Length: 366
Ligand SMILES: Nc1ncnc2c1ncn2[C@@H]1O[C@H](COP(=O)(O)OP(=O)(O)O)[C@@H](O)[C@H]1O
Ligand SMILES: [Mg+2]
Image 1: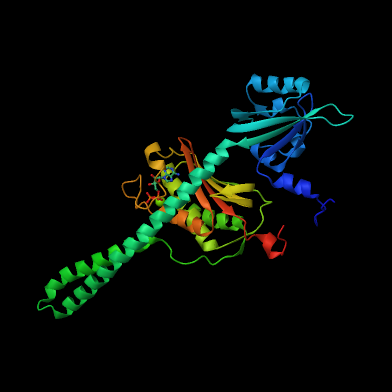
Image 2: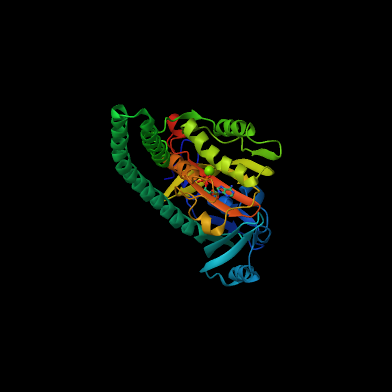
């Protein structure tokens, strides 16, 4: 008995569109007959463009790979191999494990079923799990430390105030003022290190409005020598999130880019949907990707691993708190911020799951 969903799709199609392995079918000329959603994602190509094209025009791999596919048509032996380097025409490189199964259909020439699993994806997931665990550990450490500092600090400040009232000589007030002033400064610093302690106040928002707000805020701060570009995907659905927290998170990243650009260069705000995307150990059906890209000098290699930790700054006058706050805010939305940088191209990527997105509001849980 076959299952047909409300959207009219057969169960097999739903499964094949939602598995994370790329599945392709090619004919004897290596022309693509079919590619599933994970395949479209992995190879950076839509099914519409891929079908009918030769696999040779879509991936750049060693000749040995294609030769072996061709021999498989004559000997019909299935096989699998590990760690094949694949170049895509978008410039992206990936490493995959793959298997090939010849399929004989009655009355048709035989076809090959290809299954690609990206190993980079596994490496990425392990890396992200690590990052999330580290951020959580750092945050609890800071929370604990902040508590231990603020309590005695309150006592110190209170005592200085009492002392001030008892001073025999008004000129001595200068010293109690210093104690009170420095206690306040320390308290402020600790508060900023903990970051905004409020729970997110989520509502249904358009992420482009959030980015536009950031552009508006920073365009008042920079002169015309910095170009603020938009590259939005208008098909992005609304998201349930706290707009003020997202603005703060994106603003911190953007202000760093402005400082790095030192008055000339370009900052691009780019949005894209990502399907079947993994953040930490969760696979989300749809994830919003927001990238803040600048063409400044980049982040030094020995700094980049640590920039999301508080108090880590590459600038003499920096507090090192901005990115740790951004990461905390995005983590509160079950998302993650990643960074890749080389001179001339620094990319901060915010990934936000659409877990409580529109689909759930409409009661459609598919
Ligand atoms: N777009 C960027 N280009 C170059 N360096 C950057 C960029 N973004 C962040 N950094 C580096 O990361 C460091 C940490 O940033 P942040 O946490 O905001 O602290 P702060 O801005 O106070 O130094 C910065 O000091 C800078 O060295
Ligand atoms: Mg900063």
